[in-house]
View 1: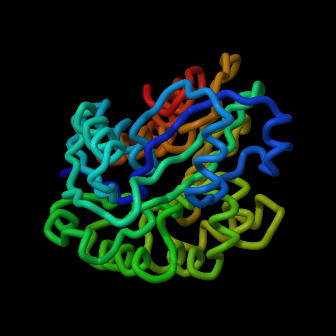
View 2: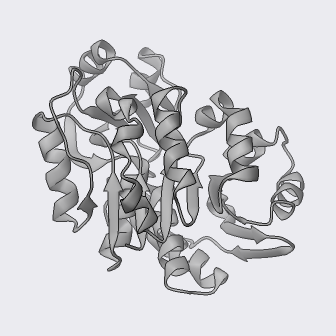
Length: 308
């Protein structure tokens, strides 16, 4: 297998809202907030659902890779309930090897309310459900060892059982790629993420906000210096400024595609990672990897949801 994704198995529930809805419910635009089941049900009762999709950050990337014809798999924890069944069916429909055997769990399958405002920004309220309970036993060592790259998400990283699952995957991987996922994620786990980036990962995906927060700097030159010192691939998306890949003293830039009719920024980073990894496993040049990532992320932001 080319790429094995391990991440939160979350059913995305897409809804359109106005800015007032965010203010009224004390939500900060463009961030991800973890909520409990009660808050999830309360918010859901106020919304009109546009679409539901088998989501989660790394799962979105893995589906993108599958759509490009790559042999990929995914491990993510769901419960044997209605949403869990839909989740598995959704991935299998996209020709992804779903490598988790679901069973009855004490808590339900995870869901994420993706609230899309008129400016196309997305604000996420995530009820992790059983997705956040992934543990050591859910990681099949042979599956990890038989994959060229293991792709992890920062969203999954948490103290206790998820961390043990993370560590087990990293220890048995041929190569490890990881997305830092979210600014709040980085701020919550800064020291641990810094250790991962410096010592355990081969490929790091981040946006400009996340990587500057990680190194406690506001200067992009500091990011360049830090990344050059790592001797690994650091891939940074910069919105309208395009994307950049850094390894040792090599810095390669790719411009953003202009004049796009942006509808929804959900999945932009996920599909960028899919495009880049597609290039990487198919031996593209670094510039061509960046261009493929940019192409996919440009396509996805011109439609609702995280599926091309």
